[in-house]
Length: 268
Image (cartoon, rainbow, N blue to C red; front, side):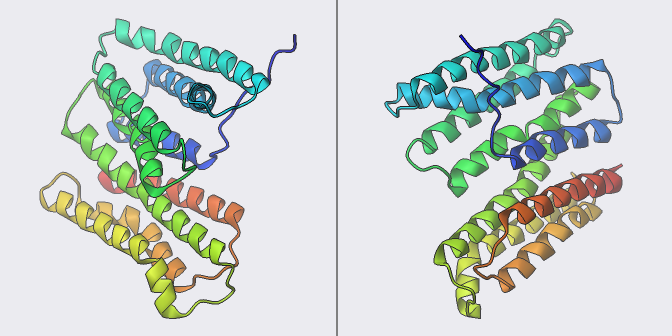
């Protein structure tokens, strides 16, 4: 019997959504230790279990996945979850019990995303729910680095969730346009297709400004969102049917790294 090949999620952008916030949380806390590595390894194990567990759940839901795929999914789900638990145990032994709260929220995000994607592969809501869970890595890292379970961790989560939510609206706008198979679009149609994208970005900037007015973040934190905001407006105004999603993915990854660098710089 051949051992099945590792099952890795095909959502390549989700790696950035998990680890960029985690790095932001660590750098913002200004502390690094072996505990952060334990957290990262545990998060990686649970993160990798997403794809095989989804396949198993789909099989149990009556959506046939094929015997070989189910077998491989069960094996790798067990391996990944075991690794996730193994690396988190030392943190629990040190008294980091608030990790239970993050685990519950993460599980809620996982199953919420699953139930929304049983019939529809992707939607804005399902993607936002997934991002809500993945960006918990920011307050989790902050908590492990400082031992504090406070409002700063919550603000870190809000900022990261808002930022990565931007890419959800932008990509779904691009998917809509791609389905139209039009090379050129009139301005009115561009604005119609990009309405949600623009409104969301305006909402994000408004929330960040409000947080700064109440002294939860410096006003300069809005600078971290400027590149994504400008890209969203420019991209909407220049919508066309010619879309290179691989290039778009690389661009969004670069923007997420830039977001992390700028946010930590202005907040440190």
